[in-house]
Image (cartoon, rainbow, N blue to C red; front, side):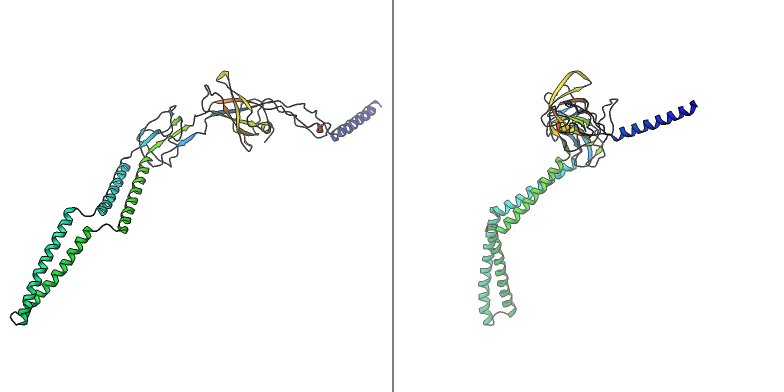
Length: 368
């Protein structure tokens, strides 16, 4: 008798608990409204220069003659970092300069005309030809009279007549030669000469540019981070590895990675504090100067036990007021002092919709 009663009581208890659980599951849970979110935004980051690392390669392929820098060296814009063997390019420059000099000399010769003794020679030759022609004409006049009187043969008369004609042609040629040497250069001739000079100068500049490319120069002021080549090695613009890596150190800044829950609260101009594990007694200060327009997959891990690895982050750049002992590439922790914001509008009070929990001090976000 007791056993059936106990079984019945157990069944009733189970049914009652089931009804109670079903009722509670259908009712909406209301989370308490957090009065205010935390103001500090913590984010990991690293130190970088005014630009990202600059990978440098020579513009020409060749054998390295000299490496002028070493790792850690500070260089100025335009400093020569590396030189290739330039023997061939130096000869190309010399050949181009010679062609320019030749074109300019031909132009000057055209402008100045013939030398004085050449003009004197042409004048003397013209006078000689004129004298020969005058003598031949006088002889022809006598022979013609004798030929009319049948005193000379037809052959002798023809010879003298053709001699006069030949001398007349030689006088005309000498006259043209003399006038050519005395005449000024024509505009079209000067234009052709100037065009030849322009082409030669362009070839010279091209040769100089190619020769300049045998030297790898610093594009900006910065610090040499890595030198991956030695004299005697072959390199070029298509080299798999950069020959030299440098970074612009005109100013240092921190690239921080703010997680999802804190990303909307970051604004330009917010103050920030930076610390590094290797410098425990130093706090560096700066302010936010640039924000990434998008969220991206998380790339920098903090190593904290409660860290979520599938979150997205927003990149934030912080300019340092005083870089102190910080070096490029150093891992740092940043704390951005964001303004305190209301976690939820007062109109949401009593709402049945669940509210997000306030962000933790380290900004651990939800799943990405």
